[in-house]
Image (cartoon, rainbow, N blue to C red; front, side):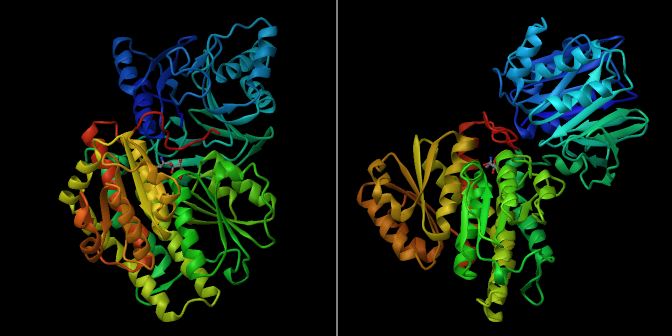
Length: 606
Ligand code: M6R
């Protein structure tokens, strides 16, 4: 959500800002803009909608200047119009902002009482005026920012340029990420290392409440008005790593990367020779943990739901999984010695962060499973396990999900061993099943014809039901989520056994019912539910293995046979056709697969 880039450069910055914004597109946005310092003034170009609109605008009305800031905006306060697009400016400053200024009404009233006229509906404009009032009162830019940090409430990251001061830029962050990049006689600021990937690999990640003064010579960082030192890190990201390659969409590229990234993730957590899990040292002992609480949002929450089945059945360890935005406000009592696991691809999701902070305040030991190691959720946790998915650009989460499942699977095995619930033989079997996963995922991805048939059975539907039992239930939910987010078809996931308690009323010949039915201990129960669907003329779409399809697929309008697997790893494998189905349907419908409407990749507001 919202992306920031800023450059103090030696070159014309408008094209560089635009390129940086393209690298931030994946976060989700609905308008964009840039501002540069020109002579003693500030000039801006802004546009509604896609970055191409901004690029056209810049072509018609080029922008000169070697210092500037850019922004992709995901509207929170005020419609996504050009007027509300960032940067917001006064005669003294231009500012870009990610997050929400929670006390902006109060600030606005105060500023209006001083005779200031607001031009936009945004919360951000209040910050531009707040800084301007300080500057007009004689404050230096640094003092103005330090004072503003005391006044602002909420979560934000900011970048500000000052009219007539091309060698100065100030950034600040609270609860929202911001990184500084070091160039050769140039300095950069950006939401994340991806935004800066084509400019530099030398990055400093700012800490909570840091604000930073950039000049072409370097940076000074402050926290609570005191100078602080932050390390410079070399990031592995390069511009090339985050391209689409020969794929038409990032989502397809990321689906196809899954055999490799699941393999990489497994390699860092288990020994293929001994077939044993090998985790880094964790700050708790599973043998004595009374309960695990998992908090996450969206697809990451569904990974947590699968993990509940694993931890409870294999390790006999009670697990509570909650949607972070619900958990954070319900004042849940938490047991002494309990462990909280926060799962997040981005490591930025504001609700997951807040849920984690609540758990910490209740004395829980917090473990983060994140894809972005430098993220705020990782840094707020006592321990971190990284999913080695690499940058995920498509808004629909795919490889992040299956690598989250991979980490959670090894964690459940480790817990089971520590609690004496697993023989060495069974551990070796489970590890072998995991090690076999990448090859099986490749096999599934190559079944293009089957996916095409399944997609044809769904593409014209208005509503689709997804059913699954046991650990396939979260995969049914994930299948429905994927389909609705990128194809805009209404889809719901249900526990197969729950269908007859309500959703069965929806079934007719127009509603495809997609059933996830691996050959596991509840297969026969799922089979009964399939019969109930067929008895009502439902349009069955079946994912199972060959024998499951032989048994149930006779009347299916489409089916796909998945490789045989130990039921333990079935959720990882069955996630793949759910992703491919959603992808194919979205392509058939011609939607914007990588940037579906209204969605953002990292949800940094409540
Ligand atoms: O970055 P996170 O994993 O914390 O993001 C959580 C959700 O916003 C995310 O999984 C979302 O549901 C995806 N768009 C699903 O494809």
